[in-house]
Length: 112
Length: 107
Image 1 (cartoon, one colour):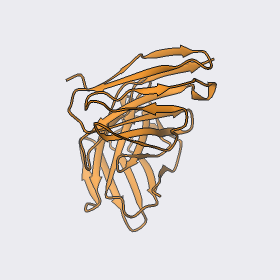
Image 2 (cartoon, one colour):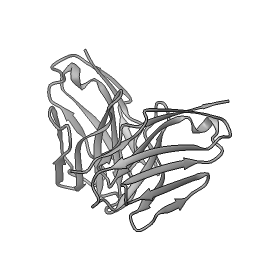
Image 3 (cartoon, rainbow over the protein chains, first blue to last red):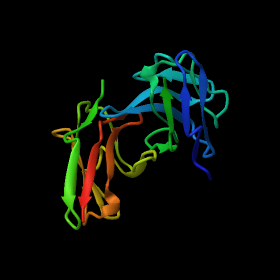
Image 4 (spheres, each protein chain N blue to C red):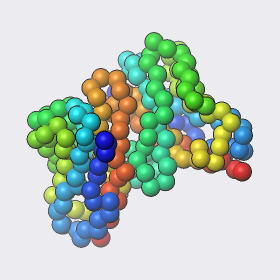
């Protein structure tokens, strides 16, 4: 099992550009989520999904869209990048119920 | 709502000493707590978890203690090693994490 795979590892965008951060898991997990990590801020939840076709907002959803058309994939879309979205983004997945999250190794995004 | 936070942003210990990282939570309805370790350049990794019907759970060199009366969670690392240097996060349920404590181990 590859676990949770995030691509790309690094990305530089100009303000106003759009892009999609990819996340895939091969553990048949129902739950998937996106976090951003900024210095001194810990991990903040952007969006999450409890199964295919179901998504919901987390703590900091503005500026981001998600969809969950399959169990395996949970892409995060930035429609119009802003410098405030410069961050490291982590995708995670887990079984339903009380179970730990499995994280990818992150995408480091810089918006200039 | 529920929040889980850590007491100290940094902790420095001598190699071989025991480390204790603390965490407080505010929602007594939470029934599941987790500790994660994040090394530089990587995603957080699961260390140990505990359910609310337990007070203590031990793993290999790590112990998690849960005090429901004061809503406090702690991670104890025995005989701390340089490889334990990382940022440690506590979690409540699936969706909530603290700010992280950076553990530095001095050789």
